[in-house]
Image (cartoon, rainbow, N blue to C red; front, side):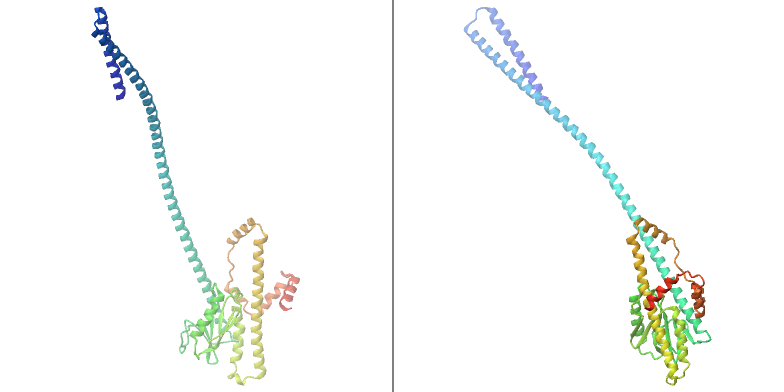
Length: 381
């Protein structure tokens, strides 16, 4: 803008000078007679006018270029102002978007933390429920075993003196606090209720730990019985162990009465050496038969359990995922199988067991004869 004022001022000065020179020329012409000096002055004036004219033209051209340059600069300024405006708008928009993203991220973090806390609480509640359920099942198993042993020992045909862990004999010493003791030939036979979610490792640990606690205890008979649920016994590869001079046997609850009846028969003799050879042989055969039968039954149960697992796994291969999902949902709403102690107690009697089996196959058996024959062939072939 200052350049423009300068150019305009220069042009105005040239115009004034031109007017003055022109006036002088007119005056000189009017006088008529011109002297040589005046002619030279006139010539110089003309040259000066020509020079001024050229300067005006040059300044005008330069001013034109400056105007064009100024216009270009104005255009660039306008473009820069537009870009700055766009940048500021973009910056403001991005800042708002960033603030929104930060807010959403914080909300997501809070939601994630809430979800984690919820899952943690649910896991803790589930673990607590599982622990309570395990404790309940364990207490039920222990109470059932103790009640069964108590009832068996109180039967007239057996009549063993017994002790529980809350009422051990006054002369009983040692680190072990067994669940149940029966007095047998001046010693005590140990019965301990056992249950675990990992029977294989658990039972071996219990054998070693119990043998350590019984070391050199002359009060304890050389045979110790661990009473476990049948389904856990099926997971064991071995049900008898020898550790620290003691024999350990893992038996189900339903085998307790035959065992105690057998021990009662042995205890009827004052000295084992005075036993009648035939009775001794009969007892040995009976114990061997019980042991063989229990081992065979455990083996059969293990094989049947394996077949059951294979059969259950076959559904994963043969059924559509939609059906599997529907089956799993249905299973979650089915109540766990619960065996009532009163029902079990009713079937402790061998005659009642035989009667129940007869009622299952006669007169209209729910199990087909062919299935029974196949089972016999599988078990006894």
